[in-house]
Image: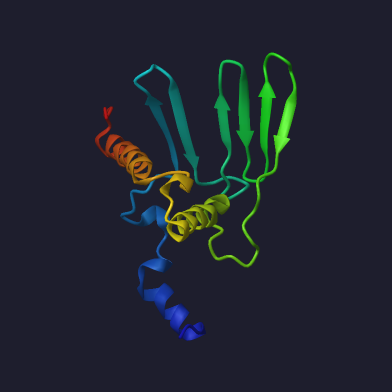
Length: 154
């Protein structure tokens, strides 16, 4: 079990005590991925490791008649035509849940899946295997593009 001696030894002899900048680690600390869809619409995903609010996700979606912004606790809709701002506060997972990762999304994905299985009704699922596969293929393509320094078409 962990104690001062075993932790000190692990830091001294294992990979955990090494300087991240001196390792053979090639994980990015800053990345921008640009997407262009078949219909011509575009999206960009920016990941920055070193920020004041660590592990925070911020979302911005810009459309022709408005924009959505989200910070993990509030979703804000601004209507370009009426200049009206509407704010939504989504439900948070229970404080006791161990599935609070990804801004609480892990909890709701599992809850939704369990509900679909419990009711034997795939119609209640917010996303299915096809959507999950597509999003994973996009992430794998982004990593391939980074490693090969090239554009990837899907």
